[in-house]
Length: 105
Image 1 (tube, rainbow, N blue to C red):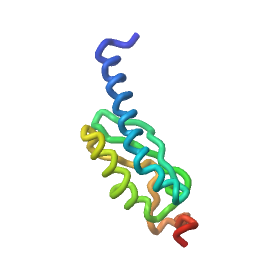
Image 2: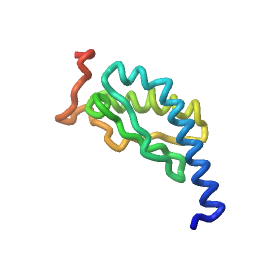
Image 3: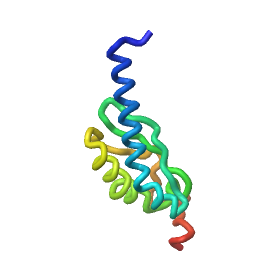
């Protein structure tokens, strides 16, 4: 059985996830234009959001820049409690499987 404190923390995290999802709604159209998207995996106790980059974002050599300059900035602006954003599948620019979206080649 969940304690009152655990229930409150779960409720707080759910509310944070909803707010983060809403902030992503503002930049998602830009990601989708390039064939990409992003999915929230969770928020840890240090207030770090873990994301999965989907579609073209998962293999794009510019994904690190998109993550920091676009996604993280949008999330932290909308949800100041969040301290950082990380992607579990960030692509290195020199990785052999990197690929620019079709509209950028």
